[in-house]
Length: 290
Image (cartoon, rainbow, N blue to C red; front, top):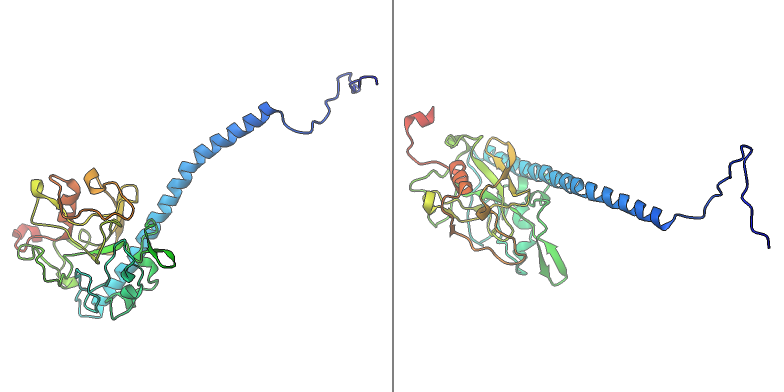
């Protein structure tokens, strides 16, 4: 058989015939380009997802804040009660004790929505979803598999604390009525906070105001899943993602292992910030009221 002769165009140049596929070199170039694009896009997508979670988190807390405000409006300004412990009752803003066991408290939405167990529940429009930050992926194992825990947000203990254990109320203000909030001002006093899944238990976030400076303590630990930050909502209704500065505030998260609480954290700037924005001394200089 004679070898096939190349075809020529009218200009005398050979006509290139269509090939059936790519060469190995061409495929490698394509894969390299795709890999480069994926490497560039993934961090941007991760940042976008993180930003979406931050917005969703703040919206959830905004809904809870509105419920907190509505309860006060319908109760002559008296704030929902903050109370520790595992007892479930109608005398607190939420009930239930969270941990990593198969306890029904971890998944019982009634403790957040039913007026028998939650003072703010009847006022929440999108319950129980708003009690959980979208960045919280914590689950507990029950008989039928893994289930998400129902809550990742806690309330400032200095807002109408009604427990029996002293928290320092002999020196610092416990705000009972919404009209009593003046120091810190409503724009500086925080109400709700994302709490770490290995720190959260009852609905109360304790900030030790007596021990300061080198004696400062981290009693409960705020969440750090928003780029080392936590969603926080203030008494005037605005919210933010508070970024923590001290690495002791955001230790490594170990799944299903509870964090040691109430630990010394000398000179921790984040503790100082929480102390400044949680309450104030009972007697303050006159200039502090101006």
